[in-house]
Length: 207
Image 1 (cartoon, rainbow, N blue to C red):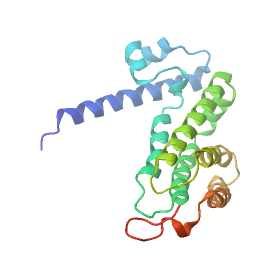
Image 2 (cartoon, helix red, strand yellow; image 1 turned 180 degrees about the horizontal axis):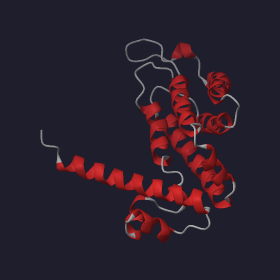
Image 3 (cartoon, rainbow, N blue to C red; image 1 turned 30 degrees about the vertical axis):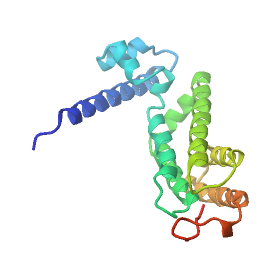
Image 4 (cartoon, one colour; image 1 turned 45 degrees about the vertical axis):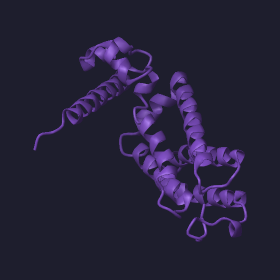
């Protein structure tokens, strides 16, 4: 079967992006973040600097190459839920997946790299705030949720912070569950009276 040209092109772009990210991370870990420049990464990855910037907006973004994927997965957990699927368990699954990704064997040197760099710590903080805003926007727009914008933004912050807190715990996965018990309780407090919230088929909507 002939593979569509668009499919090949997208796979090639994805492979180039991954090669750049892997090369950058290897150089950062070998030499130190501040000792490696964009041109060093581009040369080692055998791509032009303009190609590098077409995939990554900044040097810091090279370290957080799954940034966009995580943000999209969180918003899709809200948007793509099955009808009547509770919200909080859907978000908990995504945070569990992220924590697994960020606490695998070999992740510790990367987090040391981030912790030792003010630029990377600042980028991570701005990234988390952006993820929280994107998630809050999705929550506000969800037709089956009736919480206020303030409640949505608050819960979104809690969800994003759950990841940071859990990855530093002795048992990250257990920490995710513990934190989400509290998030679910807080979310329920913000719910309007369930008796007045029913779908078009007459069934009760669940947050």
